[in-house]
Image (tube, rainbow, N blue to C red; front, top):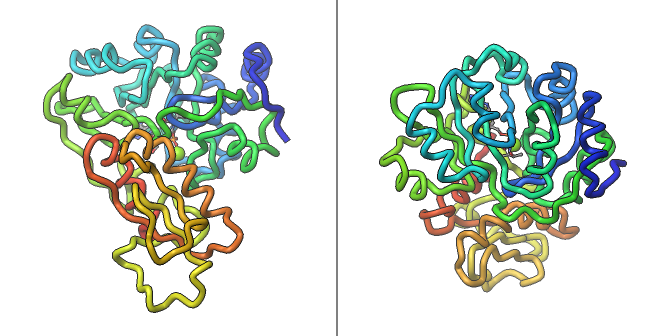
Length: 320
Ligand code: TXA
Ligand code: MG
């Protein structure tokens, strides 16, 4: 089992010798290793059981550090970074050769971000290398939003987890590519499209695909709990044998036919930010619920962080 604590010096010592540490960010917990150490990067893929074609995000302390790993930061990308770093924004930019192909899965772009969390920021400013960090979950499963989630799934393969409490945003960062002429959102996430568009004007949003995705996190079936999860609209209630075996993950109102103890509301106050922060916890809680074998769910209003929530719900309910 991993040790859980708040010791930056210990985290630094482990990372400096090529080890891996679970780190808190405002979005989700990351599985971090030295991005400039190929051995550390390779073990990230192994521990997560992640296919090598799915590249990693490089986490840095500030814009200057980011600039040292990319060829250039175009003007609109700079404006976004100024407005939202540290925060749930990842920029896809043309990489410099100091970032290895292992990190980027051979692509000529690298994903960089400055995360917002006091512990992790302190750690990053204490390191003389950036941190490659995917979400700290086994590939394809729900992302962790608490140190205990990391411990439960990857604890046996990690030395240390920095405990930064529950993640405030709860959805992975929004990824926006500046690799081509027009900025393009590659993954909806913890920074809303509306907020981005206020700074750089209208942006294109990539469709996710089920084969050969531009960003593999865009795989259609992803974020899936182990139990069967279906959209309310696709669920045939006449097939229910035992109502205690059905769970529900819903926005602001309980399903009147199901037992309340089997239901998880994202936000009783209809607050999409709260719903985002609770989404993965809800999926995890229902997935671990003893009696439940099927989870029904539904979309939330498609605005602000609701778009990213709906994106995750779409993928969790997609048939692989
Ligand atoms: O909020 C976050 O972004 C969290 C925290 C830990 O920072 N990290 C995270 O990492 O969500 P991960 O590995 O679970 O998702 C990163 C996504 C993947 O879908 C990957 O395919 C995409 O970013 N990505 C990374 N580098 C890329 C690149 N060069 N080109 C296209 N997609 C890239
Ligand atoms: Mg992930």
